[in-house]
Each structure stands twice: as structure tokens, then as C-alpha cells.
Length: 257
Image (spheres, helix red, strand yellow):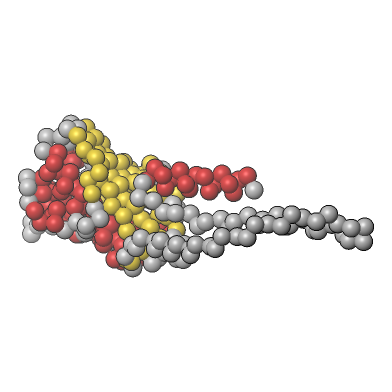
């Protein structure tokens, strides 16, 4: 459960940190904050990614819940919506149990197929005077598929050693992204190949001076204007802010058409 797994990671257990994919990284940290970031490329379209993302019961790890089952998780994908967990009742022989619940995060931005942002302190961070912001962006990839960038920013007073709690949280966040990517068909990210250098052109012969047209000759036609180069496909980025800025630029271009 959350209370066990992250707490163990915070006091130095290596198992959580080792579970994180190699792409995971704590990209920034200080005495009172840290930032974890990871990314994954999947075969699914942005729409399929969005529909899976807002159904955490289908990919979140059972071990990182309060109830012990991801089936009890839900996200209401709208401003003010809850990333919540139902804690089922446990009946005893002589008494009827009572159900409980936990609010993990609150949705502050939900733009389908583009970005889901939620605010809240996950796991044992819930007991600390800190706040966290999780931003998940979805970027369409040229040729098909989607790139997911998953960033969690935590700030405030921490009673845990920052080096250990940030590594533990990073591992858990990357584990959840890994489950989601596997569900959607993970593909390996490859760097674009550099084009081969063009062979050197032979030196051109000096141009002959143009002859003035005679009375019976027509002037030579003017060369046609060069055609504009085709637009390059939008590049994906691991930076959440840049990804959102790019989405905004595309929207502005459409509005101006």
C-alpha cells in the first residue's frame, strides 16, 4: 500500500528506486522541493491515451493504493474533479464495517487528448505540509502514436531526507507511467537519423556575358520564383511547459485561419 511502499523507499529501500525505468529522472531538487520527470512513446492515438489515463483502475499499481486494489481508484476529468479512492468496508463477525475514502489529487486542468493536470500530495506526502502538481501531456507523433510526458513537482516542508524521498517518489511515478505505457503499446524512442552529407558539387564554369537580343529575338523569360519549403512536422519535447506552449501556438494558428 501507499503507506508501506513509499515510506520504505523514503528510508532507503532500494527496491522502489530500482523499479524505475532508465528514462526516469529527478530533474531538480533542493531542501524544500523536488521535480521528477519521465516520458514514454506508445502506439495508441492521443484519444486512446486520454481515455485510458482517466481510468486509473486499469493501470495503477495495486501496491500503491490505500485499499490494496486499484479497482477502487477513479478520476473525474474536469476542473475540481477528484482523483479519489474508495476504501471498502470490512465486515466483522459481530459487526458491519464502514466504507471510507481518500482524495489523492484534485483536477485543475483537463484538456482531452492534450493535458491532464492534478494537484495533491501522494502517498506518505499526504501527511506532510507540502503540495504537489502532476502534469501529464500527450503529444501526437509523426507517423502515428503518442508521446507522454509525466512530471510531478513537490514543494514545501519535508520531514523526509529529500534525496531519499525524491528517488522513491520518482520510482513510483515512473512505475505508474510504465504500466500505462505497457497497456497502450510501448515503443522505444529512437533519435532521428542525421541525413548524409551531400557530395561536393564541381566548380561551375564562369558565366558567359549575356548577349543583347536582336530585333527579331524575344527577351529571355524570367526564372520562376522558388517554391516555399514544405512545413516540418512538429517535434515532441520532454519539457512540459514547452509542450503546452506548442499546443497553444497550434490553437492560435487555427484561430487565425
